[in-house]
Length: 251
Image (tube, rainbow, N blue to C red):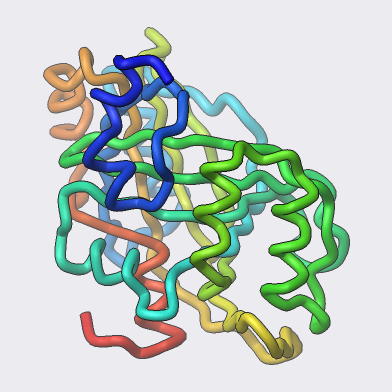
């Protein structure tokens, strides 16, 4: 293992149980804005498109789906709620239909260090999400998907805790330095490691979330982008919101 990798990850990897994986960081800033519930989607888009940084829609709207994982004690959830500086989040993401055959799932490990974050992504084998889904099901997928050993070991310590989905629209500034996403139609489903029944109506969330993403070097100009929005900049985690909705944990 290269010394640079050890220096870069030593304390964080020890906390995460990810050990020392030889993967370069690509840290970036993410600013999240809470949109008042009375704002309609077209009003939000108008503010984005009228920004002086000339945002344009760059990808078709699509549905995003996630299965979040956590320890039995919900360590990652509480790290987020308590504002722990160095923390992580493990999830599986895919696009399109929430249930049935999941053809192109991706395991994502989101790393947070202070105000910046990184994301490590790994392709998984297809699997089926239905009422027969269990933690044993997905652990078998992890084992068969040729994951790096440290990542595979980290998945053994967690199990599914939340399933969510939402619609997402994508925008890019004219200079290609800033990306904005708008998330809406949020749904939260209960998911258990042993027994599941996805026939129950999911919990809906009528909040809309704007995320501004950019490289570390562009932080000063990001203030100019943000200042043109009438929305409040705040900490917002779909995982925490979903767990609070499904599990009714205290905030």
